[in-house]
Length: 243
Image (tube, rainbow, N blue to C red; front, side, top):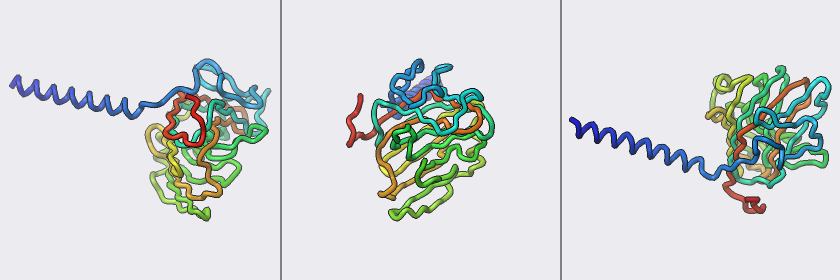
């Protein structure tokens, strides 16, 4: 009996070690791109909306400093093509509060980002969706997979229940956002669940590389925070790596 128990314990330990090794291997390659203390490496034309509070990049609009046009804080240390990004976000404000994470974007002279946006909002209308800022508009709503043909035609299919996915997202608290971009495929996950997926075959309008930026949307007073920002580059064929 003792021998059998020892064998069972050994099997359990080996299973746990194997699980830990697989988790470590999966998370390998992620590096922090925000130091938790300063905005070094991040820039916006109007820095009055941006600060660091509670160890997080904090975007805040107030009655005294209203946000009348969308603001973007852009990461300055490189551009992205194929990558994985994970971070935590927290939002407070009215139901009109809105934000997002710009990926593979083009930055205009006034600082406005154009391109893919992993959406965030307080009302739950857009959070978890993939939007194309100042371009094609909504690509995939929460709970939707979209295949975009070469001619721009979009075919939408369900990948989950929008309401159920929304119930997995915490209001006024921290949520884990993960973005995976490989070639023409982009996958969004919030708190471990896939919320949207896009396969973009529209070569004329898609972006395979570009900037990373955080958005503060125009509108009533609000606050959105981002922390534990980790990036893993899985390919950087056209741009020189910065590490």
